[in-house]
Length: 122
Length: 122
Image (cartoon, rainbow over all chains, first blue to last red; front, side):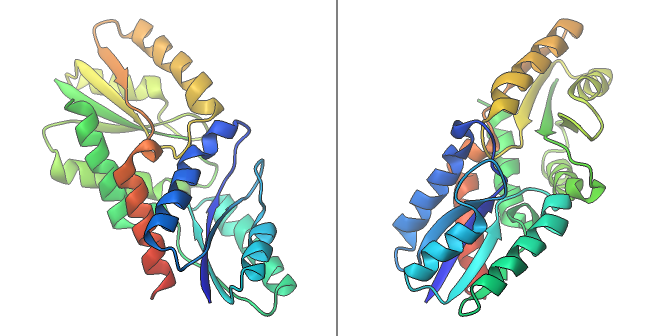
């Protein structure tokens, strides 16, 4: 069974995660058959490992991790592959893969441009 | 004259800014009459003040700052309003305003959900 993890940076302020919770709600409303969990690199729970464990317990066998980051800097280029490899070692029964960051997607960038356009023309 | 600033966090790795440069290219291709500049909170140039100065020199009189952040945590709730106020004081001839963060926009979040959907169904 396929599943998805939306992987964010994390922050001290709990309100920072609101858009991530909205993403999960949207996902569940639109793709109810595919379990989703959030995971955070730091400062917020659950960790990537906890999210993989949770989805594994729900029966997931193929998990795609989607980095909800704009840019691919040190966190995604260095920290994230290490984390992913550690998780793969701990859960050998799961096929774990990762997509590019959402900020690399043209449709996401276009939505940001369109938002900016509405922001300057209220 | 209206103008827009796309305001990001910044990072040590210069490659982190690639999606921001793409946003500027998209904006210029689609909204050529409205000048755009990037600005960063930390670790990258230009600063918000430098971006406002640059747009002011290009003739901007109304500048909207769009925070290209997912969540509204300490940076946007605490640091950003202070920065914005400082800029407004330094450039009293400019009408400076800010939108909500792009991560609050339903269309941006939907584009992320759609990206995730494509990522798990290659």
